[in-house]
Image 1 (cartoon, helix red, strand yellow):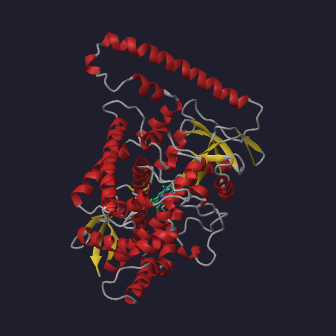
Image 2: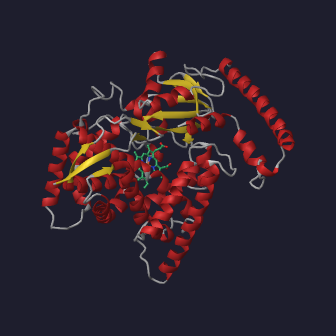
Image 3: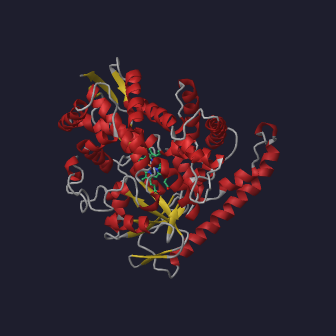
Length: 513
Ligand code: HEM
């Protein structure tokens, strides 16, 4: 967690840029004498001190300016209110940061703060979500912290405007509901069955999070790249674990830092992906692969209406993003789902009943179809209630493209904006008795628009929503029809790092039916 803090603190100062530029990869510290070291560091430190003073001056100046900024506080110099924000996450109640300020400033629709090293406006509640989701590319644009932008290169999440719209359309032609869900339900079911056979059957105890992380990665490798060979997947998975560690770190590209290792791992994954891409191109040309067998074939053979294709680099970078965005999110959702079902046996019984009805209507051994997924209504309400109480992605960020007038205040151009699903999902105004676990909230018309936003909304809504829905439901179907389970640590604490996970990974004891 301290790595996140360090990232945020350092992100305030462009020290990382300085270090990135001035400490070249080939300088080995051991060969530099201490005098030389002092000579080198003195101007660097001087620069930092001057920069710090300049930044304080600028922050205070903005605070005194005539612009009618939203209520709120920029907190401590440099740190802003990042510590309070992180503390709420560490305590497992991320919504507290927003709630305390909403109460303090008299229920505003927006308040100002300083987070992640930037001045920021937090837009509260469903009105804030509606405003941000509805103004993408007009008043606001998606924004990710520096290490993310540096590590991923040109891909969907690091580009904006028309180019991003085009790239999204290309990816959605595979991942969208019509294309994806209708064709890939059976493949997902087959992979899930195999996973359960290998990792669950014959076991007495399972650590859910560790196990479903393997499942989510294998599934993505299968559906994106048709990779099945266990050693190949394991090699990619281990590179991926190193890569993930640098995403929320100081972007110092120097041997020994996590960012450096992450960048190297990203380069190795890209090399691997490029080899797979090139081999596939040959297979497609020789008729040894089908155009619809997976995401890769689809992207290599699909063009837009003007005949424009994604480049091989674009494909490699976007597959990297999809593996990143779709890996832990699904694993977290499944883990929290199993936790809730372990805590609410009556809900488990109803889910089991629904899933057995679906199984009974099928031939022995027949795989799930899209129509079966459509029948899992109660099960999806349960998943939705789990994501309402503990959204795997607590919120996201945007950047103001112009000065924005909102709720009677001005949010200056360049400020960052934050929407918080974890706060909206627990507001009394949106959900009666919000802390109660109650899947029936999603029956009928369900929650009001913009009050339930686990996948975000608008043009930047989660691209993998259908993938995630299918994945979680296919897993749920197979797990409840095979097992019942007890939680080995009742009320296991959830920590956010940055996604919500039970602190011990949810160890359970499983009982086959
Ligand atoms: C339960 C699982 C998941 C949850 C809760 C989730 C949540 C989210 C949220 C909240 C966003 C929007 C962030 C924003 O407003 O900027 C997002 C974006 C995204 N998600 Fe997911 N996600 C999940 C699974 C997946 C999967 C399985 C994939 C890939 C197959 C995926 C790919 C993406 C991508 C590429 C974006 C960026 C879209 C863009 O910027 O245009 N997600 N996700």
